[in-house]
Length: 311
View 1 (tube, one colour):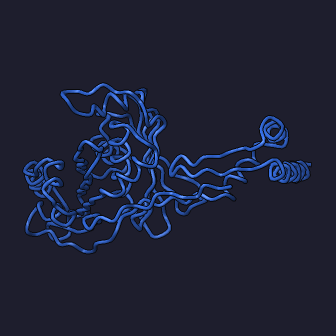
View 2: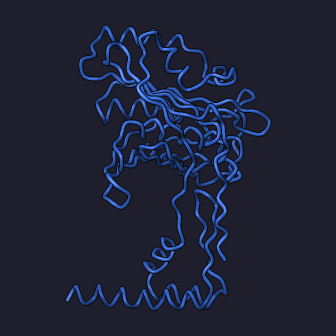
View 3: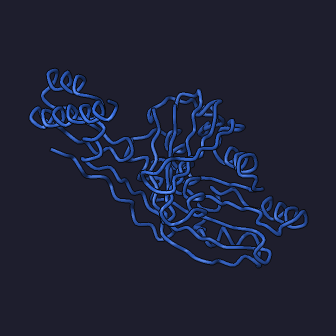
C-alpha cells in the first residue's frame, strides 16, 4: 500500500559540485550547479514560484556547507520567518546528497518588479544551522537572525558570527515559465594564513562576477564559476549532486509508536487507513487497522519498558 515512488533527480550534465583553493591555499572556493536538484524539489512538492526559489536556495546552501564537513556528518539549513512560506529546511551530507522541504509550497507571495520576492516570502526571523556527526547523533546548532531573508546574505552573516569565518556566499537561479530552470551557488572562505590583502583582493574578484542567473543561463558550469575568481584557482575535486530522500516505512512506524497506545487506538478507530506522508519526497506510507493494532501492541510494550526502568 506504499506509494514509494520518489522522482529521481533529472540527469543534467552540468549538475556538479567542485572544491578548490585560491591564493596559494589561503582561500577556500566551493561552487555548485544543481538544476536537477532544484527542479526535483519543486516537482516533489508542487511548489509555486516563490517556494521553488526558497527550496532551491536552501538546498544549494546546504550543498555548499556539506562540502565542508566530514564523511558521515550531515548539515541542515533551517529558516524560520514570519512570511507566508513558513519554515524552510534543507539537509545535505558530505557526498552531495540533499533534500529540502517548505511548510507552505503553495504560499501566495505577490511578485516584485515582475520577479519572485523571496524576502517577502520568508519574512523576518532566524536561521539555524544544524550539524550532526552521524544520522542519529545529537545535533549541534547555531542560530542567527535573518538579516536579508534571501538565504545567501543570511548564511554569510551566520558564518561570520557563529563560525568566526570570513565568508562570501552567492546563490542564484534562472526562472522560466516552468519554474527554476537552472540554479547554483558559490562559497568563498578565508582560511588560516589569509590576511587583509587576500580579503580585499578576493572582494574585488567577487564584485566582478556576473549575476548567477545570467551565468547559468549562458551554460556556465560549477568549475567555470570557481575559475571566474581568478587564474590561481585550483580545482581539487569535483563530484555529483543529487536529491536523495532517506525516508522509509520503518521510520514512520517508530514515529507512530512514539505517539503512545491511546492516540494510536484513536487513530485506528477513527479511520480504516492511517497515512503518513514524507514532506521531502511526497511518498505515502499507509497503515491499515491490523497493522495499527501491531503498532499499538508495540507502543504498550515500549511504555511498560519505560515504566520498569523508572522504578
